[in-house]
Amino acid sequence: EGPSPSSWRPRPRARGDEQALFQLYTAAVPAPARAAEAMTLEEWAALHKGVRRWSPRQLAGRRQFVWDGPEGAVAWLEVAESGRSQHLEWLVHPAYERRCDEVVAGGLSYAQPRLRLYATCRAYQPGLRTALERAGFEPVTECAVLVCQLAVRVPDRALAVAAVRSTIGG
Image 1 (cartoon, helix red, strand yellow):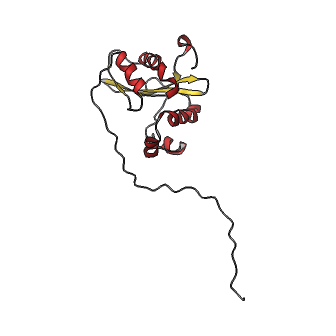
Image 2 (tube, one colour):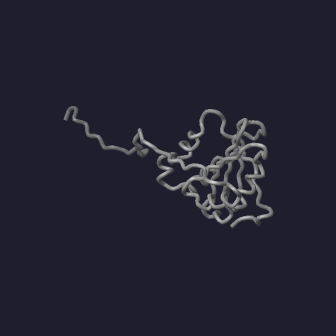
Image 3 (tube, rainbow, N blue to C red):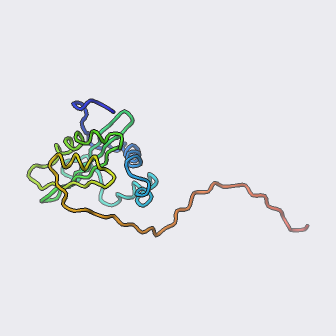
């Protein structure tokens, strides 16, 4: 279950967190969604190419935070700010769903009180949705993410030794 509530605080994301966050993604996101989004660490990292998705700097517009448990990262938050609003995106390990209220409270401590606040909660995170509603969030809209696979996955085949018979001179 992890640390006690009073000591369980988020910390800024560090460069070395990539593998732990991918493991959190793998545990929290159902297989059909991962098959459409990212199945490997490389594919997952490629989801966030372009403008650097995480930065430890306060004024970068996007800040990311991680909650640690005994086995590694168990929750993640990204706070994205624009001029008039801010957006919170979350991911919580299913084994820590009962602690979503603490995660939401910790995340809200990083929100700017003067800006309108939005949060995204995916359908497979019902505990997070309930915690957000208890914290005063109201559903505004629902979003459907559609995907069309344009490429076929090909498993990486190991090289195999093949016996070749020569037909020359024989």
